[in-house]
Image (cartoon, rainbow, N blue to C red; front, side):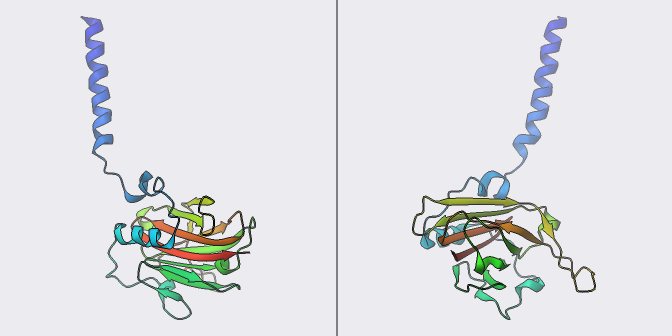
Length: 195
């Protein structure tokens, strides 16, 4: 009888632990985005953008989303960043990317910032950047970061309460790259030339 009661306790404990895990709905980024295939073409990426979950964008956009000096729009379309100098800033969908994104060199780290529309600090989001070389789509890249920062004024004070992802971003080979950035329900697509 004592042996049977231990089995019952173990079964009940296993069920009690499994119920909360089974009840958690997967988020778009909890494995869902990371396990998504890397689009091999602009058309595939834009199809993904059309079906990717959307967050509320009726609120005022963060400071990085001003239109002055920014290439691109709020449409979920891939934006070609043709500049070869830094700093360069582009917008696609719910993402603004900038810094040295237009001056990347193969195998060398560039300082690139990724600013999603929704504050990643408040939703504890992770940045996923999936990339493929458009001339050789079998050459791919995945970049993941949960390190975010807040903008700081020249006097050292924090500007606003909206964080962005600061990164040392590297692509391993020269060519024209398709980059899809996601953070929670924010999505953006950029085409960059790496020298």
